Length: 292
Image: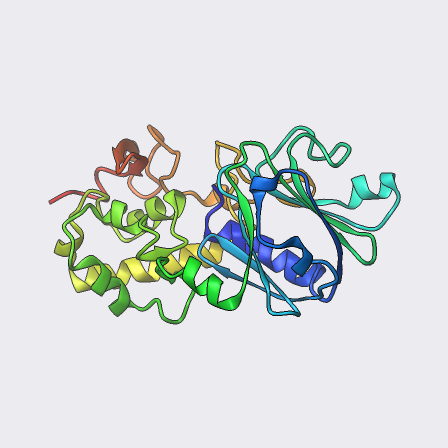
């Protein structure tokens, strides 16, 4: 599943390329993939985009909001208003890679087709149908997202906020970081690597962390997110995320411990170990991240 940096890369592209366009038509191929009244979409101008954690919002002139969640296999493909040959050359794809994403569209994974007044198109593809697009009012959006925690790139995500979320629980710090009710946008990749950089064992009880360690963790969580966005996000070994023209993000070349089991630690050369915490693969260096 794309995490915060990957969704932010998608948002930045859409902000630059579809804001100001008018939606002339919405074709719903798979009804379960779209929740809302499609009549409220047609003829509407796209005003701006926003993001909370892993959820992407496209705001329309009438006040309605298209909320996208890619889940495991969701994919957004944008086609320019060109000839078939030109479309294949100029299309941009974000999300889960599919073999037919760069062939003819729509294809068997296409769930929704947004057509703009200039005849360019946005396709929402989803192989496993877990992803969705919801049309919401501002009040409904607030309600849908009310259980999400503070976005990691928000000014409200402060060391004190992190402290207040960690102190009430003895759960392993890795499990708490993945709790979207507390922190919107932290996924498995960035939790692993931020803990390594802060020299915190992923099993360490959250309420036992010192203020110094919490401050370090806060710093590295933000730093690693910003660095990943600059690198176009991460395309890990599961290959669940691609972007422009089928290319990959580049942050995977900066992974500290994630998916580096049995490889030497970048700092001390000790072999990286893998365990499971809260059902998720967890990577750490047994020397740099000692468990007291």
